[in-house]
Length: 118
Image (cartoon, rainbow, N blue to C red):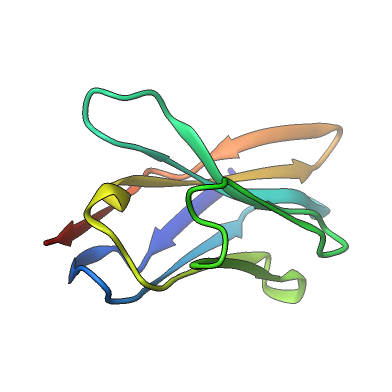
């Protein structure tokens, strides 16, 4: 059974930093694209950042220059370093991964709460 386990959320003051981690475990050959999405109360889930297996990245305009996505392929883990946090970054952050088994299948983590106080 494949699982994505997230960690690192919490409460931080505006201007502060947090680092999210997401580790994929279970039976699969390798992780393809991985990423982070977020969903604020009353809003739709939105893309934050993605990273391909070779390392190319993509960011939402709202987080460019403040957030950095990275990955450790040996550990099947993706990270999101969040700096200069703003109250509008408050949301549940979800890890997403495309994992190769018999085919490519998309998985989601359970979500981790990030709250930025003003």
